[in-house]
Image 1 (cartoon, rainbow, N blue to C red):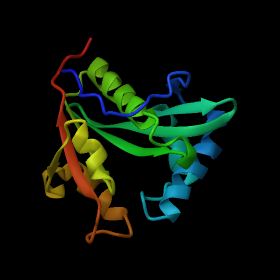
Image 2 (image 1 turned 45 degrees about the vertical axis):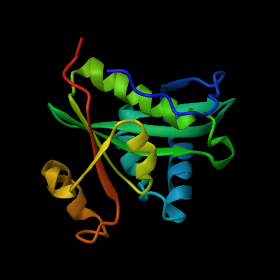
Image 3 (image 1 turned 90 degrees about the horizontal axis):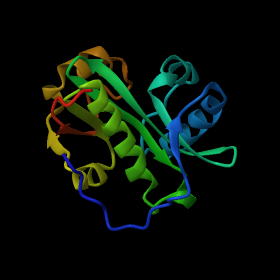
Length: 168
């Protein structure tokens, strides 16, 4: 399934790649910068290390300027987490590149359903995600959300995208 392109210029010279151990402190800093502004949830450093294989990054020289994670929840379900692009690099298509990297990996893995919880639902809706009630994601709610300080009064928006089971 082809995703619609968003009408923004793309930073073609920047490459999306899998994160490495050296990127963890900068991923942590980037995520928590936006979390401090209440634009996403905080992530402990230990959680980023534990889930490092989930993360993609974009670097400019040695600086991580964007990150995102594709976290597998179950055989048929994965979550897009912690999508962040440094402020001075926003509106250049980097967020779109990050999301597309996650969707490609989900397809390769054969995961048909992708979801996210976000404070920025319009970005994901432009990519075909549909808003759903959080209770339609019981594995997420009872597997992780119940430990969050905002539970049960979560103010994030839940969105889902069906990409089909097109694994390799």
